[in-house]
Image (cartoon, rainbow, N blue to C red; front, side, top):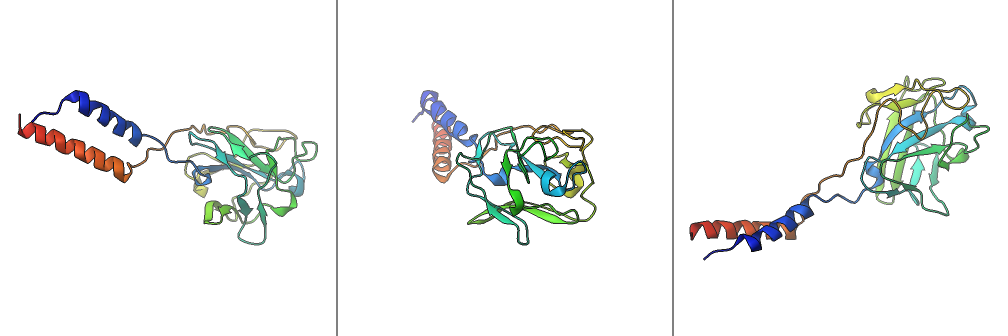
Length: 215
């Protein structure tokens, strides 16, 4: 009994194509790439901000998520339009979106007085009903006066953050909404085959083996 390649090849191609698709991207895939907790050109209550980067190949919606720290700061992100971070884009959260008082940068979302970044130690936490999705904890020595802390790797270890050296707006150092000293890039994530696809592939492999035995 023989099975011809015209039958096997398209099915194998379908399975391999399916296996290289991407997971549905979530906020857990994002990076907290920059933190300005202690601006020098303006007050903390006006000039604090932090930045996210989307390294996935898909847009991610933040609407409805909760931004908090480990204490009392907490707010639900809400906007009349979706809070979308497109693939390869940066997104800036800030105390104030008013460029005349915040140090001269453009914010994508203002959390106002509902959230703040302490100069000693603090947390940036995103969560939903299922629990924490993205979190950065920093301690004493992390914050630099007048300069943001930039992520210089795709791993959010505190040792991978360094003080920015690029000036913006009124003279503080940072790159809100733009690439800093490290060029992040987007890349799709491979996913494992679901059970049905594995069964199909296993069956096809069995047919090939059966054919070889009978040729």
